[in-house]
Image 1 (cartoon, one colour):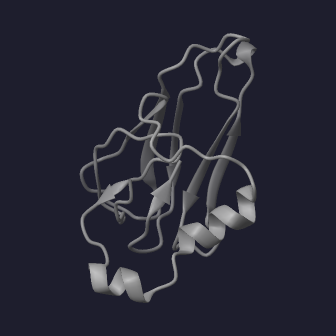
Image 2 (tube, one colour):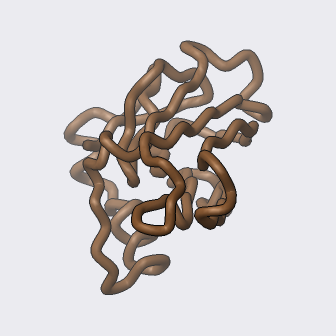
Image 3 (tube, one colour):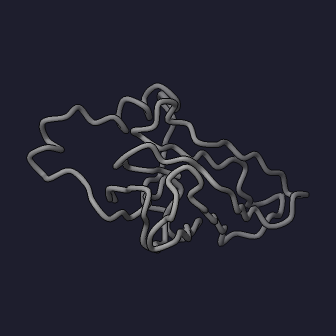
Length: 132
């Protein structure tokens, strides 16, 4: 699931590597002509690890339909799993492809953390794919 993002967002339900739905994005021709930043970032950060990019049954992302200020875009990440030792969210990576530093945040949890729900604000530099 690949959807372009921008400082203004629409609501979406996302997987472990979900995406923020945006207002404007590259055309198919532009996207094909530009190297896939996410593939390069993913290889750099998670080389050799299995990543489920369509795990909407694990995480959900809520964002405003349009951010008033791209410097403080509110993001809420909600988990659909309980935090028990048998099955829990250990880590959530928020990756924003076109930001100067694409790692927007890394959150670490344990079974003792309670629900692994997050509310934060991030800066989105430009039209960008954003991954959880």
